[in-house]
Image (cartoon, rainbow, N blue to C red; front, side, top):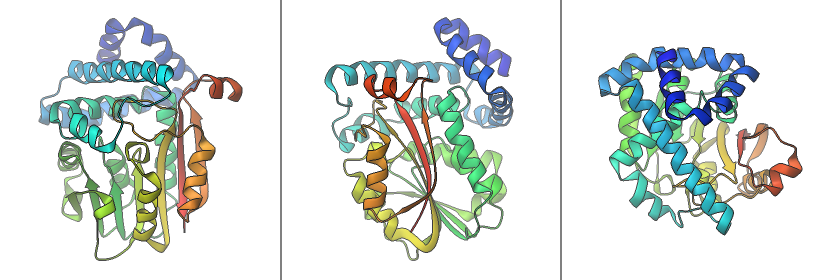
Length: 300
């Protein structure tokens, strides 16, 4: 399946071949993990009637959308979407658009070096978690972070998955039903805005991947997450700076702005990872506004 996917991808976009092969050369585990992902994801794709070619086409469509968003960003200094509501109307509430977007993002975890490193950081940190009885995921997206949690955390009692997109919840539910059916009864799917969410108790572990850049007021969201996290709980967060996409709203100009917001919300940074999307020096990264992925494990 891996060979079929890469052959089709490179035939459709020959220019992208060099970038992917360079990433594989620098990170040999990427190719192995891509194959492992596809072997497992294949059952979900069959259940959803998604072909390898459709998966690649969704990925290439996402690349095109991001290229357009970057051109707008470099010309105007702003992200294409002006508000959270606009993103919801144009992306999250549109089943076809959202489905393709999530499929493309899922594949990017194993084709983009910076996405891969962030994903691996998350997987590695899960192994060191201690208190994880009652857990929450904010914005399940393509469902792969949820799946890794279920693979690695065996003794949790409940996992609440909250998202404003019905499509994301459907994808995540489908992945769990197909690949981790034994965990399904312990997972609750909630369509809601986390800023309005009022659970019965606090959470031992909260994960929120790639959400802050999608909202109008990320500080408000972080303060709400602080309220939801138990005193000795852990919070895994990822976001990005200078990373235009069709549904990104809030612009972080650099990683220091992310750190300042985290601290203003009351969190302590236990561990972090900063990964630019291109291998350049920091002066070039800043002057060319190259996108940066950021991940951190936080505590109160």
